[in-house]
Length: 184
Image (cartoon, rainbow, N blue to C red):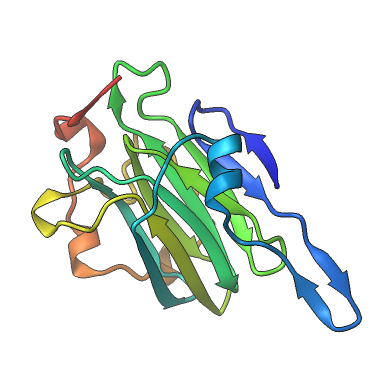
């Protein structure tokens, strides 16, 4: 596995070694041993999967302490623009984001540690999106930032008239209007 550092400390793009032949391909999508050697000690306890259509934007979500989550995300079918926003108070990159295109063809994975809000937009007709979480989901610990916060300047690569949101994701506060539970 090749680990690609991003512009924000702690966020990594993981590129698996893919073995292709006439039958198709094979790759190891996760190894706890390799992950710990290359990224650090993180134990994942829950795997999730979602299916969405073109224009869906999910996020920007996070879990508040003591139920914070690190995530390892990937696409099984289709393509997304995956986004992580640094919401750690005191961080030199607070309010900055990294966006990565994850597709069924590039097999890239994005590691998002605790202290980041996370979301994605669907760039293909349909996507199947999988992610590992380091803690179980706790509804009372849910936090979020509105997807189109103008201070964040995220280009979701979807025309505004094609964006599909849940009612909940339409009504989150801006980053400047929340008290970040994360300190660096």
